[in-house]
Image (cartoon, rainbow, N blue to C red; front, side, top):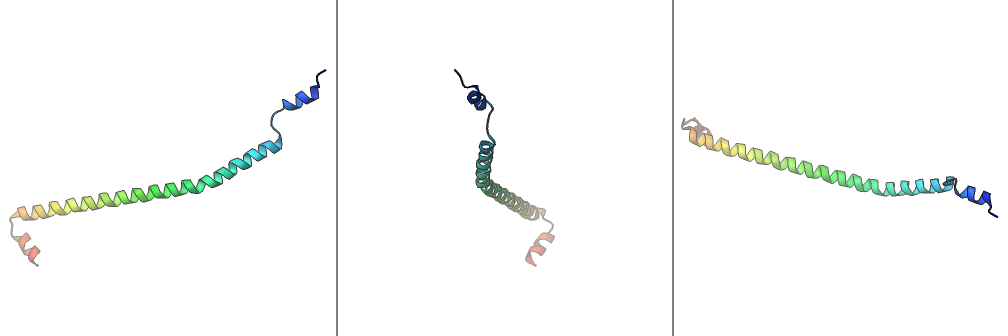
Length: 85
């Protein structure tokens, strides 16, 4: 004959201990991974900052080149005096 108590106990689902152990393992894995994500985020910020500085320097160089070209092509003579001073 079948023991109904044995089978009914197996069908109830997870025990409290099993759930707590699972939550503890997930929390442990999360605590290991959070610093890794923080470092990756900081590296992304550094890369963004470096890219922004490069774009600013490129814009300044282009502006300076245009400024020199426009002064050389000006022909007013005032630009020549300012360069010599």
